[in-house]
Amino acid sequence: MQNTLLQFRKFDDPALAENLIALLVANNIPYQSEENKLSFDPSFGAVSETSTEYVVKIAPADFERANEIIIAHEEETLDEIDKDHYLHQFTDKELTDVLIKAEEWSLADVVLAGRLLKERGVAADAETINNLKQQHLAELRKPAEPQTTWIIMGYILAPFGGVLGVFIGWHLMNHKNILPNGEYVYGYIERDRKHGRIIFIIGVIFIVLITLFRIFGRQ
Image 1 (cartoon, helix red, strand yellow):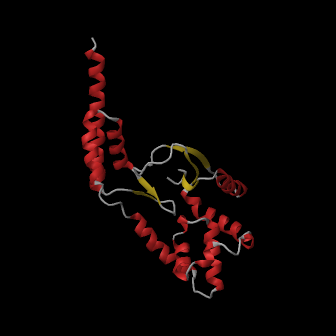
Image 2: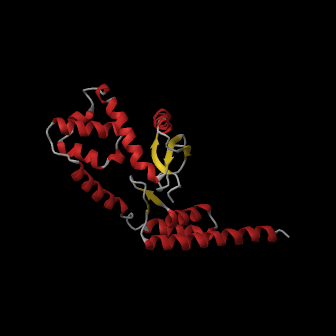
Image 3: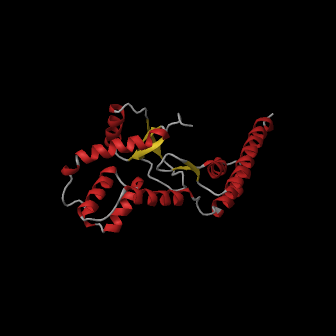
């Protein structure tokens, strides 16, 4: 599993992905980049047909080192950040949240948040932040609420041999989230994954039966 490359960062702007790749190359961290054209969000949300995301993957074992390298790079350029940057308007608690939920922010924001807290004399020692991050990871590990609506739709669509029904089943049983530390966790509760497996099997069986009927029904 350590040799498997997992999503480390994704960007809407290819230039940002290239900047990250340059840092990885300079520090001999193996990576893989992907350009994904999106027409349907894996979480069942629609997106623009022209949406593109640029994904950079690295080994989970390199996540911490890569973050340290990027933070060091951002610290070198911190003085170039505009003094009107929106983080200057954040409260101490909001800045602390930026440090805790670093995956939701650019690393430039994370580094700046740390500096602003230090300038304000707010205690944000590494041990305290790490403990809060562990609590945040525990929250992220929790699966999504029961997907009752999608399960019902899956059972309705699967017998008709529709690809959407099969996709719903596959997604429910296989979808995983990647945590900021590179850990993989299932996105849905065990009950929903079991329903997804049943929906997927039903869908595949009916697709095969319908295909055979169309082939042999013409003879």
